[in-house]
Image (cartoon, rainbow, N blue to C red; front, side, top):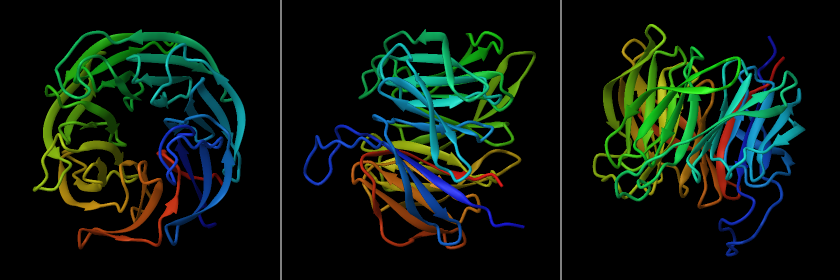
Length: 362
């Protein structure tokens, strides 16, 4: 059996940010492709892709295409056998630059979250992976709270349930997750439910267990993860909250920090979260039957503002994309001792937003 090969994709802002004393220094290459060594947990630069301000990148569920936010809307790339990217096309989202995107599980549609304009945009996808026309646009409405973000709609994340029936849109400004029924023929969305969070908690991202039975919502301001059971009953989504856990150490207070990234390990055994301000990563052991989380550790990532994290498929290594220190840091995970050990020196990465690990075909 041939050894699995991996690449890592990193996306970062190309304008603004702060590096080497020049806050306005620019860089045309927003996406970097790295070769990843599964044995050492380290990576080396492979190639760069010219794109403006990729706020987020995602890979299609068939693993053939990569999509990125850009100032102009959405860009599609074909993933080549060696992991390099081949440009396909770009399409406008008819609004302000998005902050998150994902595809449905049949890769027929791509969804874009609009933080700045509070909009959910649906675009269809062609069979060759390129982005097609806009199918639907929904603006969230309302006023809420008096917190740092909570006064008007800010859509932060859009993610399908694993049964591919409902799109969940977290709204950090309105303190809820809107659940939309997807019409698989037209791409239109219909509101089916609203999952409400605590006031001034700021639900930021939602992730599902790989078996699809549980949802994990990380809250930016309150620094918590709410755990929900999920099922579809008579064509209606049912979410029931069963647990709330803090992402911070016991001696740290919420509201001075920001819970940000959340990832579920490939084998469904662990959930990982990052905390800006505290500049740490939290690891939880996950009960596969109940979905409940048990905190293992909260430890520093040796960088500022860990905006995204990646976990190797074997759960041995953690990579932290640190936006404000312009670095990626590397760690070995010791679950028995509940520690992480820095795995070699940091590498420079300008104003990083997201990091994805991808297993190559063949």
